[in-house]
Length: 109
Image (cartoon, rainbow, N blue to C red; front, side, top):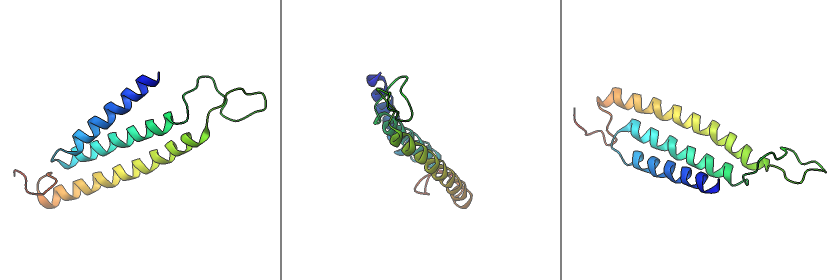
C-alpha cells in the first residue's frame, strides 16, 4: 500500500512539473493543480495509513487515525480551489488582453 501511494505521489509530481514547464497558461494551471493534489496526498499519507482505526482517541482504542493531516488536507483543498479559480480567471483575462495563451505573451497568433 505504501509503495502504491508513493508511486501515485511521484506520478502526480512528475506530471505536474511537466505541465508547469509548458508555455501555455492553462497547462500551467493544470500543472499547479496536479502538484497540489500530490502535496495533499503526501500530507494525508504522513498521518500513517491505517485501516479500521478510530477517528477519535478512546481509552480502549489500540490504533487511531491522526486528525492533524486530515485537517491539513481539508484546509489545503480549500486553498487549492481558491488558487485554481484565481489562476483560471487570470488566464482568461490574459487571453482576452493579449489574444493568445502563451506564458510570455509572445506566442503564435
